[in-house]
Structures are given as C-alpha cells and as structure tokens.
Length: 136
Image (cartoon, rainbow, N blue to C red; front, top):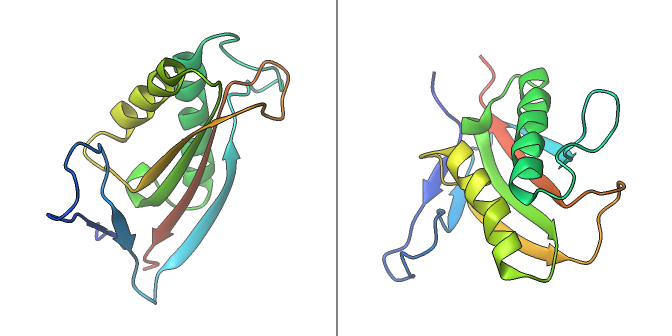
C-alpha cells in the first residue's frame, strides 16, 4: 500500500537524533489529527502507575486503536509530540525509547518534552500525533 508521507533527513544536521527532521504529505492526502494518546485502560483507569515505559507502551496501544478507527496505522503518522510529566531526563528517555522502538524504522519527526503535570490521575505520559493517508 502506498504511503502518503515522505520523511526528510538533512545531511547538514546531526545524525544523533533518532527521527527524521521533517516530513511532507501531498495535497490530496487526508490528514488525521489525533487527540493526545493517554495510558488509559478500557475502564478509564490509568495503566502502569509509576512506570514511564509502561505508560508509553499503553499510550501507543491506544494511539493505534484511534489510528485504526481512522483507517490509518503507525506507518501513516507524520509527526509526534511525546509529553512526559517529569523534570528528570532519564524519565523522558525511558518513555522515548518505548515510542522509538514501537515506531521501529518509521522514524517520524518528533518532539520530546518534560511537563509539570498531565490531565489524568497518576498519568506520566501522553503522545500527540498527526497522520496522513491517501484514500483509495
């Protein structure tokens, strides 16, 4: 299946980043703006309390459900923003590594941010995303 997005890398920027620096989607693509994916269980409780990695994995799982309902997959994501409720770099990195691993070779442009608090009780991670698909 043809993908709508093109990931862009730049030889003039550092290659240490684990993501492309930009991405494009053609004018005829359908953009999908997802609500922030939260680490919530089906009953509304927060998953993996106290566990940055576990919450990142649950947030990606929930993102995949929203993408599927929109006719898309992780491979159609054009950008992400990973929000982590911590001032500790190692907590941000723990969440990021899970996100990076689950996106595999689809290294979309991403921003990793430490924030003071997120919306749900015991929530440590939230992931925002935009996707683009070509409708057949």
